[in-house]
Length: 234
Image (cartoon, rainbow, N blue to C red; front, side):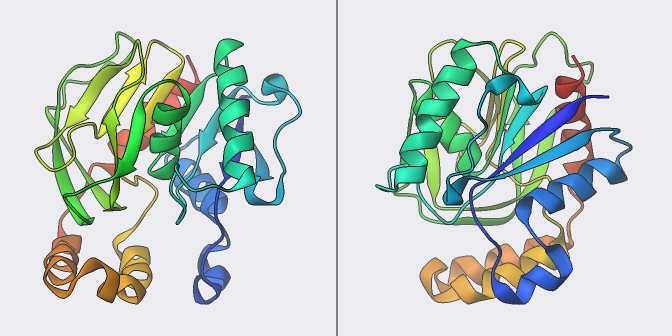
């Protein structure tokens, strides 16, 4: 049985804790619902709980965060160093939202606050190219998004997996070692409806209202979840 290390880079708002517990717990529930037979280890990165070695787990997933990869927090710098060392050692790495941006940034690409502003709600991206290990012919991906930072430049050796006009580098992969998504496969419409209203003023009323109306759309979150599981089990 494979072990997935969940590198939790944020904590939930207090009103969300009773139902959702943590971002790592959300991923564990998500993969379990898809039949993922993994063991899990949880690391609270903001509290300095970095893995001692990259072989403690078979794969690693970096969660979302309210922080930006450019923020001058000591835990972000420590995570940069750990990612670089883990990648150099052959570790299998997965990123979602902040994790997506941090993997790009740490491995030689660039992520920053986007002049396009916030992207929230269900967004559709076009599948550009697929890794050789992925047995799927899906042409587009719909996921829930909540971000205003974006990957502006992919790291060396990365291949673009999914793209849109708003989010050019929405997903990428590097061989059989890195798989990364800006969208949130682990988010549900219910969770997003409870999360985003507190950010309404920051997002802007028009963008907020438009994004919230998309949450009734179906998504491809289960498909992306199976892709990630397939990647872990390579």
